[in-house]
Image: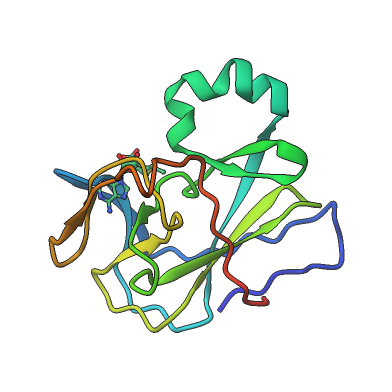
Length: 163
Ligand SMILES: C[S@@+](CC[C@H](N)C(=O)[O-])C[C@H]1O[C@@H](n2cnc3c(N)ncnc32)[C@H](O)[C@@H]1O
């Protein structure tokens, strides 16, 4: 398991989990998969983020495809996750196998296995209760956005675990 050095804002040690790969699903699009088993608690990825100011996002970013990839950030800002961070697909709350935590000070998002993950599984996060697309889950059940639960972007869910 990789460790994060939280003591230094200038140096970020990236986990080098060589078993991750991108695969395409006909309905969910590209997603992150693992070739090897991953143990609960493993730091699977760290994404550096590109932060958009509130006005910049409102006037420009929001009107582009970036709106499907950004995470809420502090002070009304939004962040685009670089690396694999924008490639994790969604599973409804309780079914996701990866959690994420935003490190605002270092402009990073850390992704951690919430349970043991088997070889070949897709790594999914939960985007939150209200999503803007027809959800295709592992077991093929689906849920669409409704008037009671309007589409909501960007990603707005924060797991409360400590690294
Ligand atoms: C942050 S991106 C994830 C990467 C994306 N699959 C791609 O190929 O670029 C979010 C988009 O992925 C798709 N997506 C993610 N999870 C999904 C799911 N469970 N069911 C259907 N589409 C999903 C939706 O189109 C959503 O707007």
